[in-house]
Amino acid sequence: MEGQNQNMKILCLHGFRTSGKFLQKQISKWDPSLFLHHFQMDFPDGLFSAGGKSDIEGIFPPPYFEWFQFNKEFTEYTNLEECISHLCQYITHNGPFHGLLGFSQGATLGALLLGYKAQGKVLKEHPPFKMFVSISGSKFREPIICEVAYKDKINVKSVHFIGAKDWLKLPSEDLATAFHDPLIIRHPQGHTVPRLGTYLNARFCLAFSYTLLDSYF
Image (cartoon, rainbow, N blue to C red; front, top):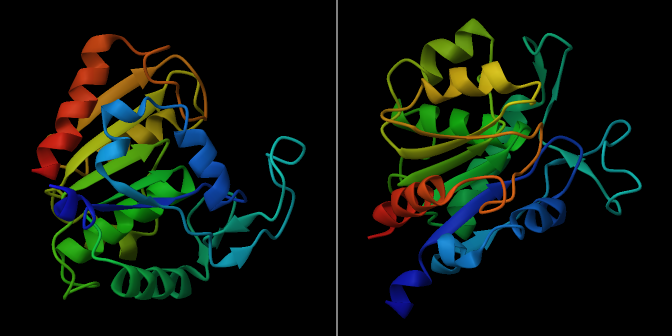
């Protein structure tokens, strides 16, 4: 099992204008016994340096990064293709990866990669991903992207954390519909990584753990 565990990597994609180290700190809230000690977690930084003020300034030290840029309506994207190419190269060189985990922009991007792979657009030689964890994720809104990435239900075990006070609550719910049989875990907070076990009852924590560990074996 120890040898198998070395291959069970999870690629963790941080949110907009934060960093891999910040996401690692966010995830450290979780009890490792739920699933974290079963996998190797990889926290790369976004391709681009933050192009503006970060929401975590004064909370967590720089540098800060972003995966791509977008307009206010989230219908136009800059450097998205470069970002996808960069991540595909990273996955190829550092994988294979068992699954993806993302917060906000990272979750949105992770779901896009899964949808594109399912349609044969990217990562054709990479083994199928077995799991996905979305925290405050959303769909892209550009029709050309949607027609490919969300054409069919994405057949990957998925867990979607959705906050009652999150400004991306409805988009997060919409993203969950892109997956086959998603597990939705709701929490009372906003746009953040919730503390498992504090805000969520034992039943949901167990469901979360079983869903991910089922993809492990």
